[in-house]
Amino acid sequence: MEKEKITLSVIKADVGSYTGHSKVHPELLDIARASLQEACEQGILIDYHVVAVGDDLELIMTHQKGTDNSEIHKLAWDTFSRCADKAKELKLYGAGQDLLADAFSGNVRGMGPGVAELEFVERGSEPVVVFMADKTEPGAWNYPLFKMFADPFNTAGLIIDPKMHKGFVFEVHNLKEKKKILFSLPEDMYTMLTFIGAPSEYCIKAVYRKDGDGERVAVSSTEKLAFVAGRYVGKDDPVCIVRCQSGLPAVGEVLEPFATPHLVAGWMRGSHCGPLMPVGLADAMPTRFDGPPRVVALGFQLNHGKLVGPVDFFADRAFDRARELANRLADYLRRLGPFEPHRLPSEQMEYTTLPVLLKELDAKFTDI
Ligand code: 13P
Ligand code: 13P
Ligand code: MG
Ligand code: MG
Image 1 (cartoon, protein in one colour):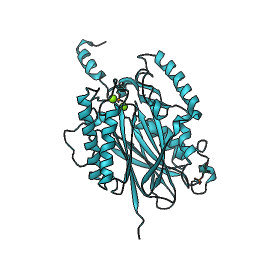
Image 2 (tube, rainbow, N blue to C red; image 1 turned 60 degrees about the vertical axis):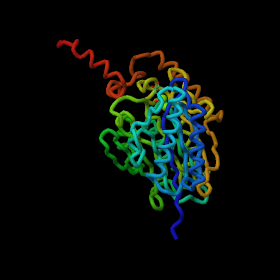
Image 3 (tube, helix red, strand yellow; image 1 turned 60 degrees about the horizontal axis):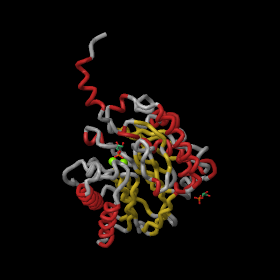
Image 4 (cartoon, rainbow, N blue to C red; image 1 turned 90 degrees about the horizontal axis):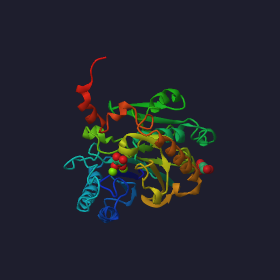
């Protein structure tokens, strides 16, 4: 008999926030929880956990309907829509920001929300970590996913654990061209780095194990709002799911990359780069210059699809120094003001509100 599969779906959207782009209002969280609770009672979901990371509302859900399931996606869409209605009533900022379609059309992909889903047979013990970031974009996961699954200086298991020694397969997407490619690491490491080192163009979508049936063990959301809307409507604040232990990176190896706050795009008006600061849920609230960008890591043990947890990993003081370094980097970068590399390079400003202004100046340029 085939073992029962569980799907872990993380679907998120910014449906309005206060004050400005800082926080999700508690009334929106209540509405989302009530909506998912009802879905549990109706047998649509096994379990759920709703949190806010900055101005992003995150729905963490388990069920047995597989990935890209229209019933689950409709549940997420309807939940976000109800929250957006409340956000409009409260006159919150950017109410309905990420709901880019008028009506649900079968799948939330391409409609604004960010989606990361994994379907798998639950192991004897199934530790997972859900990462959620605000004020950045999908490429922000390239550096940490590479470290977790490919860098032996980060992940001791790549050397020590016989089940990890062969490495992992990475699926990389070019989001603009809508193309994907697989890299088998460690053999293809140098080639892959030429692509993923440019996170505004190439994103790691998923990681597969080489052992056993080659299943997906990590997945990220790669929705880009500007590509959907054709204009700047806020950042694509991404999520990422990583399964851990027993032939996969240990939880500590999965968290370790965030001890170095790498520079990511998406700070202030989606137009600046800044350090990705690991924080606990209580500090997942961008302030300074609408940032710096934040990342939260919630750990769960799955128990027949029930979400046992969460453990709010980055609340731990072991990440104090990473926060300190992030603040120092923020001090330095802020001093550069409108100058690159704090301000994003021109190619990336194409997806902000700047082109509108530049167009008006076209006529004033004369030949040299
Ligand atoms: P597992 O191989 O059982 O996942 O344990 C790894 C470990 O010791 C974590 O530090
Ligand atoms: P969000 O993408 O989180 O809504 O932030 C938008 C912004 O412009 C912040 O400065
Ligand atoms: Mg916002
Ligand atoms: Mg946001």
